Length: 595
Image (cartoon, rainbow, N blue to C red; front, side, top):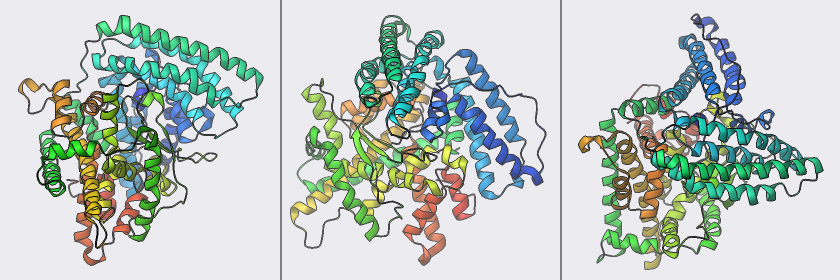
């Protein structure tokens, strides 16, 4: 999972734009007006409200700024977004080329999604972790890559740190009645965030030799650490006892979010059927291959055996790195997709503030970053304080099969390869506004596609052990597919209760579903359920995968013998991370259903 932008979690300062009704822009002036309005929106609104995202994108004029989380600024942001919604609505898309008209739709949907989040979902009143992890990320993006000399980045960190204590003042004002699980997750993360500022941040800037900046940093960093400690104590003593809110979006809001973010308007009951059908297909395939591995054992017994086949925790990063060369060689030998660069991603341990809700992620530089182009492949290692059973459960997620599928998903030809294509994305809009059903759907699609194309298949005259190894790798891929299927089901049920008595689907039911139906350990099921309460539409993995598979097969039928897999993948990449509905229109030239 790549780091992605959630504007709803970050708030800053910007000029308040007039909300007076805009006149309809004629077709003749539409293209020029859209170019001007979209550029103005990014520079005057988006990055002013989200300067940390500006840093991530590679716009370093925002490096000293921090999101303003005050309620008054939230209202200014809402007003500004409504103003730009009107400006975009006034532009006639009939006057735009097809690709630009799609960008117009993407940007308009993005603004509407942000308004839905700020005005209706209102996580700024519900999720205490948005504040503590948000400010941590604002410093992390200054540390993680050397886009400027260390003294320059340290001075920027000092300026951001000066503003952090006020964030927690605003948090105490804003947080009304959070869901208990949101406060619990924030409390789980807080010690790691404190440790991050105590250890990781000073280490990252240790080479700085600006005496004043170092002295200023010693002061501001100590204040931030104390602010985090105080915030944690306040959450535990004050906020947690009164955290009785509801994390559920409800069917109407869930459907709107899905439509705005992914351009998917399939009825939720039909989406749930699609999710369950794919879950059952993957369960049947798992059972079939498990019988080939061990005819006398049940699929659950084979799964338990698979969970034990993993590297030692201190060898985990090496195990991932060892897959890169073979994946690259296979992609090139079998003409899977063009890889635009020879440079490989850098493997590292997941930063502390991301560990509670992710096992692995890809963190590439922004598309406008010119001084540091290194991408980081983050892997969450067991904590030193964990019990042995907890470590064993965690490492079961990195078995011989899932290490392959995770390497494919995060690196080759998944997220990292898509990142390598970003210079060829067709517009600024598509470099900044991403669809998760595209980005995560692509990465998840590649897990199955690579094995279907023959990666890790046993060679001719293979030994029984080689055949067994190949089958175990397929079981790992299927286990990951079942994880995403379980996310699909739980996303809908957690937030709508669809198909359940009284429309209720509890945390306990969700965890059990991940374990029993998704073939995951209980610790994974708990992490995944916690994530699903706040990342409501994390069904986009399987949703996007199925959309891409249908697009591929529809194009294959249309092109017949002229269809070429690498040409399809390259063409898909060139469209950028747009909703699949947009890419279908561009590649098939019709409005046929995405599923």
